[in-house]
Length: 385
Image (cartoon, rainbow, N blue to C red; front, side, top):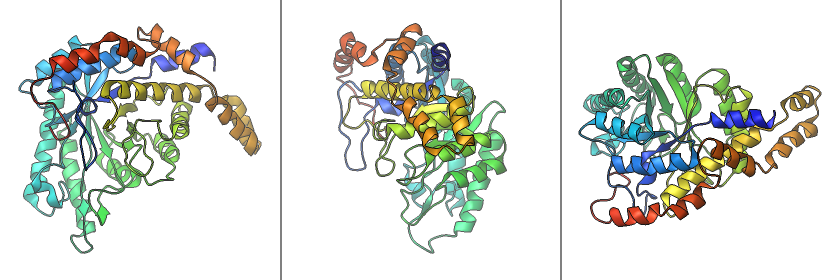
């Protein structure tokens, strides 16, 4: 692929940032508060606008309800538009209330299931007001002990609950169904893997797509295979990009294993047109690193991994694969991965109106000092806020 073609592909790569990524977040043990973090959804959009301005590749922001609840969602959508942004996926919260102790949509209590379904349908209505076309779902459901509940019946409850939400969605909206192989339940998880999510999506209909969180796998899991399979089935709805060393560490994407990210993006670009209709979103926990630079670094990591994937000599690779040249095929991938694409990606950002070095530009802008001072009073937004 020529340099001009690579640039054109990269200019079409848009990465959604999470509203909660700008706020205080941490581990299950401690949240280290930082100065200048947003105090509400509008200030989260202010920070997201800075990220988009400098990277020129982050035009949408995912929101979490009720963390980002406001009195007037129309005004929030308008504010986003004024900032050069739009609202992306709406994420219902089904894991922070006592009622969900035994699960949400799989709970044995019909009242709890009804509460969870009502919240998700409310989020569908909120999404309409925000101009969002995606409902992103993750559930904490599972059991802590053998015999606690019927795993068979819980799958029925999961499907029946999802079906009610699916039927409440407009045709233009996509349901993104996330999975996680463990946690917080100790014995079993109701949506533990891509296969379970995939089967539910098949039963629900074409508006239901699998959401791959790159951290929600056991160490050694071949995520690029999962991506390739779901692309072939036209059921890959999107990503929650992050990285992990053990499981669900929520590190910055590409930080612990940049080669894995390269291989994932290679499968995507090989499918053509950056796999049209796949949503690229960040879902990370910036606990000790500064929020805005961390999000920009994550975007840069995805851009660079994608550029390397686009530089793979596809005709030569196909020839090597078809002739059984194992080492030759591997070398073609490694040559692309070893290419320094940073100057190329910097040019793309500049041509889009962003900065060659977004992090340096941010440091020189004085924005962090400004928000440290202007947001010194009031309640900072954070995990669970």
